[in-house]
Length: 266
Length: 302
Image 1 (cartoon, each protein chain N blue to C red):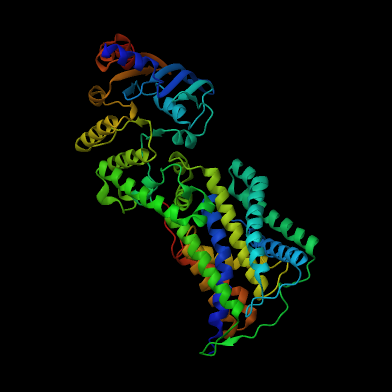
Image 2 (image 1 turned 90 degrees about the vertical axis):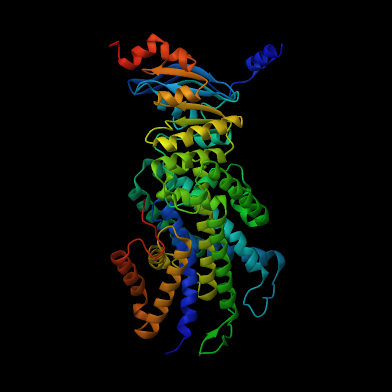
């Protein structure tokens, strides 16, 4: 009984993020070709596929760095296909990059605080007319930023400029930065790439912790071990199209997936 | 030697410094040298003069607040003038610079700013004539303050105003989300966009701050010297020298650079003669570019 109601609720629940017949052309190349999928609230969804499959282009489309040639993108049921990236961040979409690049001369804490949305201090006049309110918000934002830096184990470097961080630490900083905007969903582009094994375990743990707080993840990753351990479901893309979807085990056994990775040699 | 040059230098430095803040912010955030910035000063001074005139027409003659040479109408007019100059900068950006920036070649924008500078200046000559004018023709008696230095009440008030404005801008840059976003944008526009910063808004804020401070600098020149259409254009070299000396993008640097240049100018007038005044900015500018191109507070890129 309780199972069916949970099922019903899941069915009626609006997906956090929806791609509907999304197409993106670059000149003659169709980088993303008629892709549709949904990211359900609370899940960790993997997006895998061979190099050049169109995964990062798909991320750019979802996050608003580029706009689709055709098709719709919905964030919490709202059509956002034409909206700029910073507006989508305001609506609860966070995104990290394959090669994270923090602002080098700002401190870690400043890098994280930059991502805070909807403060009075964003308006020029408010800073002079209601300085107390702005100062109070600044203190609150700073506390929150320090907590997030603690979460990603970077608190002791909070006052250092971001240029001192290693590649793996930059990925953790990005995670903290994205969390600062209180996202409903986080798109992670290859969080494991170029990260040593110890730090990778930290990253996996943090993703689980954050997911346990109810935040949804969509994750591009080549590290299949990580995908199997983290993801509830997996989408497979190849040559710009969606090949199949399923649990990590189902996908791993799918002959189409094996063929896509091995280029038909199998 | 006579220490009067200290006060003269501080005053010149304040005017240069307030202008240089705008120059340094536009340079670091929009990545071009805005040669029309000096003309924002002149426009600010004339806009303030016009508002003072309008207040005079509405309320009749208002006595100055002793011991200053001006009364509340000028203070109210400066605030309106700051808004007008900020909007003028914004309008110029929307009509001219933003369109050229979109094409991506900085040198075209710089040349356009030269054109805008000439157009703005000629427009002032057309509307107000090129004859010098004044906020007040009253003569203030300078008070001796020791060490052979004399200052007028106006000069003290304007130095305090500069200190307040500089502190305000510094706090804005370091303690608020607006300022942090401006710093981020000056370091890397593409990254700033990714983090969720509304770049168009920060660009607007930059123009408004630059324009408003240029207006105050213009009014200072108007109160202490005179108002004429070329007043801002003549400040261009010292302003750029100050911005570069302080380090592009640094607000405290621009102000300190302004003070150093102002002092050096005033000192040179006393030591080697007034005809060398303009050469001072040039010499300082060249030495900085040769010895330490990133300036006093500049940060090396990446």
